[in-house]
Length: 328
View 1: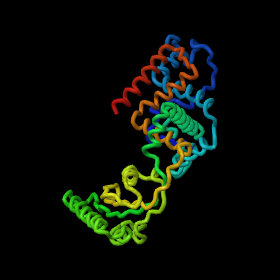
View 2: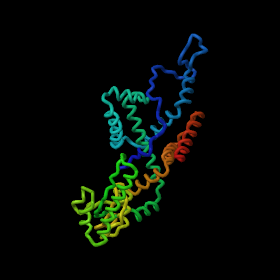
View 3: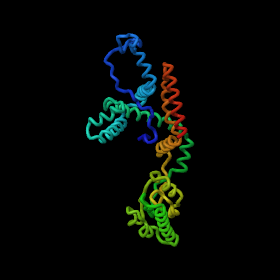
View 4: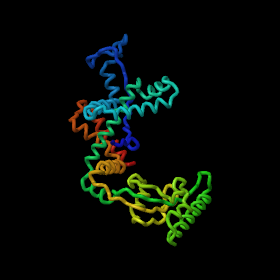
């Protein structure tokens, strides 16, 4: 399943004018939309169009063209529906009544739940388009290098954890002392290992991980790619039957022991994982790619804005979005 990167991609052009209903039919730009006794004050359809175009036109137009393209490119799968349901229901659950929920979404320009669903569906498909675009930039060499250098077989391991229990209410001196005490304790554990004590005995005596300290620190068998970077890198460096030096992690101070390591899986078995990982790394490193991806799929379908003003607005909008991501 593709990972959705909504934490790093939120389309910045919020649709402000949605759901406007027109009960009259005005076919020509010069038709009168609002009339006065003094006809020189009349407002024509073209007057409204030009005003809306200047204020909201490019935002609305981008949403419209993306919806047409992306609905053709990506079907409304169960995965799409599930994502939309989750987003809408999370909003609904925040409000006590349906009326409060509707008032909230009305304030943001959505006339009803169906329009909100269309918005979430559009953003989901935008992310699919961006992901596909960035995956296309991942080279075979990058995949091979990642497989060679970072993919490992399942590991059976153990650890010793000494927590650094600081709180926001502590003074800086108290925090420093607490950290120093934890470091002294883990250093004592490391010295016992160097003196020949068995890892499981030291773990039973010192480790503060309540889930494993009664079991010799055993963490079981796991795939190292599921670990945080610091822990994974520590296990990468340790040989089978050996333990690491003291490692500072988000949990405190740790020592890792590698009991077994299975052969790494075949490249084809993990190629999808590698591709998605490299894709996410590229997007994290260069958020400009999200806008390049959307531009690319529009150009793939050969879109052309006929209105000169809107074309200029579009070009300027995309240029500014990419410029802003460069300065972040």
